[in-house]
Amino acid sequence: MIRVKTNRNKRVKAHLKNVFKGFDLAVTSGDYDEAKACLAKAEKRLMQAAAKGTIHKNAASRKVSRMTVRFNTAFSLED
Image (cartoon, rainbow, N blue to C red; front, top):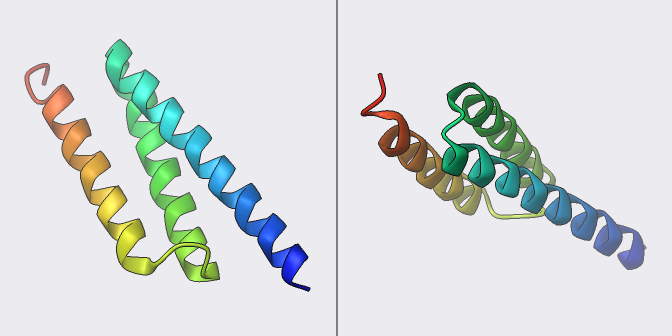
């Protein structure tokens, strides 16, 4: 049973890393629409992971907050 949960947690964390990479790539390239979509996707996935107990609820909220701040600072001058 523990192997099943461990594998699920690894799969979820790997997926989260891919979502973060997509967000970072979109922000560095300056693609506003893609970054906005990736931010929404990341927030959804983080909250799902927190709900399942893969990561702590506060850690998920902290990551969303930091990503939102990064998004806002990257695109504040272009609006």
